[in-house]
Image (tube, rainbow, N blue to C red; front, side, top):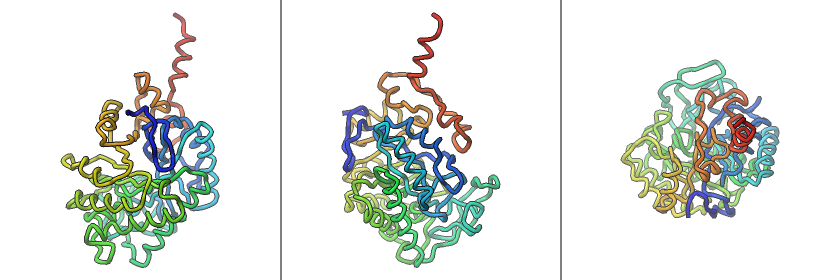
Length: 361
Protein backbone atom coordinates (compact mmCIF):
# COMPACT_ATOMS: atom_id res chain seq x y z
CA UNK A 1 0.00 0.00 0.00
CA UNK A 2 1.31 3.43 -0.93
CA UNK A 3 0.42 6.82 -2.36
CA UNK A 4 -0.48 5.33 -5.75
CA UNK A 5 -2.88 2.71 -4.40
CA UNK A 6 -6.65 3.07 -4.28
CA UNK A 7 -8.36 3.94 -1.00
CA UNK A 8 -11.81 3.94 0.56
CA UNK A 9 -13.07 7.32 1.72
CA UNK A 10 -16.59 7.40 3.10
CA UNK A 11 -18.84 6.32 0.26
CA UNK A 12 -16.12 6.71 -2.38
CA UNK A 13 -13.20 4.74 -3.77
CA UNK A 14 -10.26 7.04 -4.55
CA UNK A 15 -7.99 6.36 -7.51
CA UNK A 16 -4.94 7.21 -5.36
CA UNK A 17 -4.11 8.52 -1.89
CA UNK A 18 -2.90 11.98 -2.96
CA UNK A 19 -5.18 14.86 -1.96
CA UNK A 20 -5.07 18.40 -3.30
CA UNK A 21 -5.11 20.52 -0.16
CA UNK A 22 -7.35 23.58 0.16
CA UNK A 23 -5.47 26.71 -0.91
CA UNK A 24 -6.78 30.26 -0.98
CA UNK A 25 -6.06 31.76 -4.42
CA UNK A 26 -8.16 34.99 -4.36
CA UNK A 27 -9.36 34.69 -7.94
CA UNK A 28 -13.13 34.55 -7.52
CA UNK A 29 -15.23 37.05 -9.43
CA UNK A 30 -17.58 39.76 -8.28
CA UNK A 31 -19.68 38.82 -5.25
CA UNK A 32 -17.57 35.70 -4.67
CA UNK A 33 -18.73 33.88 -7.80
CA UNK A 34 -16.36 31.17 -9.09
CA UNK A 35 -15.03 31.85 -12.60
CA UNK A 36 -14.34 29.73 -15.70
CA UNK A 37 -10.63 30.12 -14.93
CA UNK A 38 -11.24 28.45 -11.57
CA UNK A 39 -13.02 25.59 -13.33
CA UNK A 40 -9.97 25.13 -15.55
CA UNK A 41 -7.62 25.26 -12.55
CA UNK A 42 -9.42 22.53 -10.62
CA UNK A 43 -10.03 20.35 -13.69
CA UNK A 44 -6.30 20.41 -14.46
CA UNK A 45 -5.70 18.71 -11.10
CA UNK A 46 -8.50 16.13 -11.33
CA UNK A 47 -6.06 13.19 -11.24
CA UNK A 48 -5.74 13.73 -7.48
CA UNK A 49 -7.53 11.09 -5.44
CA UNK A 50 -9.49 13.97 -3.90
CA UNK A 51 -9.58 17.72 -4.49
CA UNK A 52 -10.51 19.96 -1.56
CA UNK A 53 -11.34 23.46 -2.75
CA UNK A 54 -10.13 26.74 -1.38
CA UNK A 55 -11.89 28.15 1.67
CA UNK A 56 -15.40 29.23 0.72
CA UNK A 57 -17.39 31.57 2.95
CA UNK A 58 -20.71 30.29 4.24
CA UNK A 59 -22.12 33.81 4.57
CA UNK A 60 -21.17 37.41 3.74
CA UNK A 61 -20.05 37.79 7.38
CA UNK A 62 -17.73 34.79 6.97
CA UNK A 63 -15.56 36.50 4.34
CA UNK A 64 -11.94 37.10 5.25
CA UNK A 65 -10.21 38.43 2.15
CA UNK A 66 -10.98 39.96 -1.25
CA UNK A 67 -11.43 37.56 -4.14
CA UNK A 68 -12.58 34.57 -2.09
CA UNK A 69 -15.59 32.54 -3.26
CA UNK A 70 -18.87 32.06 -1.43
CA UNK A 71 -21.55 29.38 -1.34
CA UNK A 72 -24.47 31.38 0.06
CA UNK A 73 -26.38 32.57 -3.03
CA UNK A 74 -27.68 31.12 -6.28
CA UNK A 75 -25.11 32.76 -8.56
CA UNK A 76 -22.29 31.31 -6.46
CA UNK A 77 -23.93 27.87 -6.58
CA UNK A 78 -24.11 28.08 -10.36
CA UNK A 79 -20.47 29.16 -10.59
CA UNK A 80 -19.38 26.24 -8.42
CA UNK A 81 -21.57 23.84 -10.43
CA UNK A 82 -19.46 24.65 -13.49
CA UNK A 83 -16.29 23.90 -11.51
CA UNK A 84 -17.68 20.58 -10.30
CA UNK A 85 -18.79 19.62 -13.82
CA UNK A 86 -15.30 20.31 -15.18
CA UNK A 87 -13.67 18.15 -12.50
CA UNK A 88 -16.20 15.33 -12.92
CA UNK A 89 -15.68 15.37 -16.69
CA UNK A 90 -12.09 14.31 -16.02
CA UNK A 91 -13.09 11.63 -13.53
CA UNK A 92 -12.17 13.66 -10.44
CA UNK A 93 -13.68 13.83 -6.97
CA UNK A 94 -14.12 17.23 -5.32
CA UNK A 95 -15.15 18.44 -1.84
CA UNK A 96 -15.95 22.07 -1.01
CA UNK A 97 -14.27 23.58 2.05
CA UNK A 98 -16.77 25.50 4.21
CA UNK A 99 -15.30 28.54 5.95
CA UNK A 100 -16.04 31.40 8.29
CA UNK A 101 -13.02 33.67 8.82
CA UNK A 102 -14.16 35.11 12.14
CA UNK A 103 -11.70 37.68 13.42
CA UNK A 104 -9.34 37.05 10.45
CA UNK A 105 -11.20 39.73 8.53
CA UNK A 106 -11.62 43.50 8.38
CA UNK A 107 -14.53 45.97 8.11
CA UNK A 108 -13.42 46.75 4.54
CA UNK A 109 -14.44 43.23 3.47
CA UNK A 110 -17.42 42.88 5.83
CA UNK A 111 -21.03 43.71 4.89
CA UNK A 112 -21.83 47.39 5.57
CA UNK A 113 -18.34 47.90 7.04
CA UNK A 114 -19.26 46.13 10.27
CA UNK A 115 -16.73 44.63 12.64
CA UNK A 116 -15.76 41.00 12.08
CA UNK A 117 -16.98 38.58 14.75
CA UNK A 118 -15.13 36.19 17.03
CA UNK A 119 -15.60 34.23 20.25
CA UNK A 120 -14.00 37.08 22.21
CA UNK A 121 -13.02 40.68 21.53
CA UNK A 122 -9.34 39.88 20.97
CA UNK A 123 -7.60 41.13 17.84
CA UNK A 124 -5.05 39.02 15.94
CA UNK A 125 -1.58 40.46 15.55
CA UNK A 126 -0.39 42.00 12.32
CA UNK A 127 -1.96 43.07 9.05
CA UNK A 128 -4.47 41.68 6.57
CA UNK A 129 -5.21 42.30 2.91
CA UNK A 130 -8.31 44.33 2.05
CA UNK A 131 -9.71 46.02 -1.02
CA UNK A 132 -7.94 49.12 0.27
CA UNK A 133 -4.55 47.47 0.69
CA UNK A 134 -2.88 46.07 3.78
CA UNK A 135 -4.55 47.13 7.02
CA UNK A 136 -4.01 46.36 10.69
CA UNK A 137 -6.43 43.86 12.17
CA UNK A 138 -9.19 45.40 14.27
CA UNK A 139 -10.62 44.25 17.59
CA UNK A 140 -13.54 41.98 16.59
CA UNK A 141 -16.97 41.92 18.13
CA UNK A 142 -17.64 38.97 20.41
CA UNK A 143 -20.62 36.96 19.21
CA UNK A 144 -23.61 36.99 21.53
CA UNK A 145 -24.63 33.51 22.66
CA UNK A 146 -27.94 33.87 20.83
CA UNK A 147 -26.14 34.63 17.55
CA UNK A 148 -24.16 31.40 17.46
CA UNK A 149 -27.13 29.32 16.33
CA UNK A 150 -27.33 31.47 13.19
CA UNK A 151 -23.67 30.77 12.35
CA UNK A 152 -24.29 27.05 12.85
CA UNK A 153 -27.33 27.21 10.56
CA UNK A 154 -25.28 29.01 7.89
CA UNK A 155 -22.86 26.09 7.74
CA UNK A 156 -25.76 23.70 7.25
CA UNK A 157 -27.28 25.88 4.53
CA UNK A 158 -23.89 26.15 2.80
CA UNK A 159 -23.53 22.35 2.86
CA UNK A 160 -26.95 22.06 1.22
CA UNK A 161 -25.88 24.59 -1.41
CA UNK A 162 -22.74 22.52 -2.03
CA UNK A 163 -24.97 19.50 -2.58
CA UNK A 164 -27.03 21.50 -5.06
CA UNK A 165 -23.84 22.48 -6.91
CA UNK A 166 -22.98 18.80 -7.29
CA UNK A 167 -20.03 18.52 -4.90
CA UNK A 168 -19.11 15.03 -3.77
CA UNK A 169 -18.80 16.28 -0.20
CA UNK A 170 -17.62 19.10 2.03
CA UNK A 171 -14.81 19.80 4.46
CA UNK A 172 -15.49 21.93 7.54
CA UNK A 173 -12.59 24.34 8.05
CA UNK A 174 -11.98 24.26 11.80
CA UNK A 175 -8.29 25.08 11.36
CA UNK A 176 -5.72 27.78 10.73
CA UNK A 177 -6.98 30.53 13.00
CA UNK A 178 -10.48 30.91 11.55
CA UNK A 179 -13.76 31.09 13.47
CA UNK A 180 -14.20 27.49 14.63
CA UNK A 181 -10.51 27.28 15.52
CA UNK A 182 -10.87 30.58 17.41
CA UNK A 183 -13.56 28.94 19.55
CA UNK A 184 -11.45 25.81 20.08
CA UNK A 185 -8.30 27.48 21.42
CA UNK A 186 -8.12 29.26 24.76
CA UNK A 187 -5.77 31.95 23.46
CA UNK A 188 -8.65 33.39 21.41
CA UNK A 189 -11.64 32.15 23.43
CA UNK A 190 -12.17 33.79 26.82
CA UNK A 191 -15.93 33.24 26.94
CA UNK A 192 -17.75 32.48 30.18
CA UNK A 193 -20.89 30.96 28.63
CA UNK A 194 -21.40 27.40 27.36
CA UNK A 195 -18.95 27.97 24.50
CA UNK A 196 -15.95 28.84 26.68
CA UNK A 197 -13.81 27.44 29.45
CA UNK A 198 -13.31 23.66 29.22
CA UNK A 199 -12.21 21.82 26.06
CA UNK A 200 -15.72 20.36 25.91
CA UNK A 201 -17.31 23.81 25.86
CA UNK A 202 -14.80 25.24 23.40
CA UNK A 203 -15.45 22.32 21.03
CA UNK A 204 -19.21 22.89 21.21
CA UNK A 205 -19.34 25.14 18.12
CA UNK A 206 -17.37 22.61 16.07
CA UNK A 207 -19.69 19.76 17.05
CA UNK A 208 -22.83 21.80 16.46
CA UNK A 209 -21.55 22.71 12.99
CA UNK A 210 -20.85 19.04 12.29
CA UNK A 211 -24.40 18.18 13.35
CA UNK A 212 -25.82 20.95 11.17
CA UNK A 213 -23.84 19.83 8.12
CA UNK A 214 -24.52 16.12 8.58
CA UNK A 215 -28.23 16.85 8.89
CA UNK A 216 -28.22 17.70 5.16
CA UNK A 217 -25.33 15.54 3.91
CA UNK A 218 -24.46 11.90 4.53
CA UNK A 219 -21.69 12.01 7.20
CA UNK A 220 -19.60 9.87 4.85
CA UNK A 221 -19.46 12.94 2.60
CA UNK A 222 -18.18 15.25 5.35
CA UNK A 223 -14.64 15.85 6.60
CA UNK A 224 -13.14 18.16 9.23
CA UNK A 225 -9.84 20.00 9.15
CA UNK A 226 -8.01 20.79 12.41
CA UNK A 227 -4.62 22.41 13.11
CA UNK A 228 -3.75 21.87 16.78
CA UNK A 229 -0.48 23.81 16.77
CA UNK A 230 -0.61 26.16 13.78
CA UNK A 231 0.19 29.67 15.06
CA UNK A 232 -1.25 31.42 11.98
CA UNK A 233 -3.50 34.28 13.02
CA UNK A 234 -1.74 34.70 16.40
CA UNK A 235 -3.35 31.47 17.62
CA UNK A 236 -2.35 29.60 20.76
CA UNK A 237 -3.62 27.09 23.28
CA UNK A 238 -2.32 26.26 26.74
CA UNK A 239 -2.80 22.51 26.23
CA UNK A 240 -3.35 21.56 22.58
CA UNK A 241 -3.11 17.83 23.36
CA UNK A 242 -6.10 18.08 25.71
CA UNK A 243 -8.09 20.53 23.58
CA UNK A 244 -7.66 18.75 20.27
CA UNK A 245 -7.59 15.30 21.79
CA UNK A 246 -11.10 15.93 23.07
CA UNK A 247 -12.19 17.28 19.68
CA UNK A 248 -10.77 14.30 17.77
CA UNK A 249 -12.44 11.79 20.08
CA UNK A 250 -15.76 13.65 19.95
CA UNK A 251 -15.74 13.53 16.16
CA UNK A 252 -15.70 9.71 16.27
CA UNK A 253 -19.39 9.70 17.14
CA UNK A 254 -20.38 11.28 13.83
CA UNK A 255 -19.18 8.69 11.29
CA UNK A 256 -17.32 11.26 9.19
CA UNK A 257 -15.41 10.62 5.98
CA UNK A 258 -12.13 11.82 7.45
CA UNK A 259 -10.11 14.05 9.76
CA UNK A 260 -7.57 16.30 8.03
CA UNK A 261 -4.65 17.40 10.24
CA UNK A 262 -2.49 20.41 9.46
CA UNK A 263 0.97 19.84 10.95
CA UNK A 264 2.53 23.23 11.60
CA UNK A 265 4.01 25.23 14.43
CA UNK A 266 4.85 23.54 17.75
CA UNK A 267 7.44 20.81 17.15
CA UNK A 268 6.97 18.71 20.30
CA UNK A 269 3.30 17.90 19.68
CA UNK A 270 2.72 14.13 19.56
CA UNK A 271 0.96 13.80 16.21
CA UNK A 272 0.84 10.01 16.32
CA UNK A 273 -0.89 10.01 19.72
CA UNK A 274 -3.37 12.65 18.56
CA UNK A 275 -4.11 10.88 15.30
CA UNK A 276 -4.77 7.64 17.23
CA UNK A 277 -7.65 9.32 19.06
CA UNK A 278 -9.59 9.55 15.80
CA UNK A 279 -10.70 6.14 14.57
CA UNK A 280 -11.51 6.95 10.94
CA UNK A 281 -9.61 7.93 7.82
CA UNK A 282 -6.83 10.43 8.52
CA UNK A 283 -5.36 12.87 5.97
CA UNK A 284 -1.91 14.19 6.87
CA UNK A 285 -0.79 17.62 5.69
CA UNK A 286 2.21 19.83 6.25
CA UNK A 287 5.20 20.03 3.92
CA UNK A 288 5.06 16.41 2.76
CA UNK A 289 7.10 15.23 -0.22
CA UNK A 290 6.79 11.84 -1.92
CA UNK A 291 9.24 10.05 0.37
CA UNK A 292 7.65 11.34 3.55
CA UNK A 293 4.15 10.67 2.24
CA UNK A 294 4.99 7.08 1.37
CA UNK A 295 6.47 6.57 4.83
CA UNK A 296 3.40 8.04 6.55
CA UNK A 297 1.09 5.71 4.64
CA UNK A 298 3.31 2.63 5.04
CA UNK A 299 3.54 3.16 8.81
CA UNK A 300 -0.23 3.48 9.18
CA UNK A 301 0.03 7.03 10.51
CA UNK A 302 -1.90 8.42 7.54
CA UNK A 303 -4.40 6.94 5.12
CA UNK A 304 -4.08 9.84 2.67
CA UNK A 305 -1.66 12.76 2.30
CA UNK A 306 -2.57 16.22 1.06
CA UNK A 307 -0.23 18.49 -0.85
CA UNK A 308 -0.56 22.26 -1.11
CA UNK A 309 2.09 24.22 -2.99
CA UNK A 310 3.23 21.10 -4.85
CA UNK A 311 -0.25 20.68 -6.35
CA UNK A 312 -0.50 24.40 -7.01
CA UNK A 313 2.59 24.25 -9.23
CA UNK A 314 2.16 20.72 -10.60
CA UNK A 315 -1.28 19.95 -12.05
CA UNK A 316 -0.04 16.42 -12.85
CA UNK A 317 1.68 15.91 -9.49
CA UNK A 318 0.77 12.24 -9.05
CA UNK A 319 2.09 11.39 -12.54
CA UNK A 320 5.32 13.27 -11.86
CA UNK A 321 5.67 11.30 -8.61
CA UNK A 322 5.08 8.02 -10.49
CA UNK A 323 7.69 8.81 -13.12
CA UNK A 324 10.22 10.40 -10.79
CA UNK A 325 10.00 13.50 -12.98
CA UNK A 326 11.24 16.94 -11.91
CA UNK A 327 8.67 19.18 -10.20
CA UNK A 328 7.71 22.71 -11.22
CA UNK A 329 8.80 25.30 -8.64
CA UNK A 330 5.90 27.31 -7.17
CA UNK A 331 5.95 31.02 -8.03
CA UNK A 332 5.06 32.61 -4.69
CA UNK A 333 4.50 36.02 -6.28
CA UNK A 334 1.40 34.64 -8.02
CA UNK A 335 -0.14 32.70 -5.12
CA UNK A 336 -2.85 35.25 -4.31
CA UNK A 337 -4.91 37.16 -6.84
CA UNK A 338 -4.28 37.87 -10.50
CA UNK A 339 -5.19 35.87 -13.58
CA UNK A 340 -3.95 32.78 -15.38
CA UNK A 341 -0.27 33.39 -14.64
CA UNK A 342 0.77 31.15 -11.78
CA UNK A 343 -2.72 29.65 -11.74
CA UNK A 344 -3.49 27.66 -14.89
CA UNK A 345 -0.25 28.05 -16.86
CA UNK A 346 2.06 25.60 -15.05
CA UNK A 347 3.28 23.06 -17.64
CA UNK A 348 2.39 19.37 -17.46
CA UNK A 349 4.56 16.46 -18.58
CA UNK A 350 2.70 15.90 -21.85
CA UNK A 351 3.46 19.48 -22.88
CA UNK A 352 7.10 19.07 -21.95
CA UNK A 353 7.30 15.73 -23.78
CA UNK A 354 5.81 17.34 -26.93
CA UNK A 355 8.32 20.19 -26.72
CA UNK A 356 11.15 17.72 -26.39
CA UNK A 357 9.96 15.57 -29.32
CA UNK A 358 9.74 18.61 -31.57
CA UNK A 359 13.15 19.98 -30.66
CA UNK A 360 16.17 19.52 -32.98
CA UNK A 361 18.57 16.74 -31.99
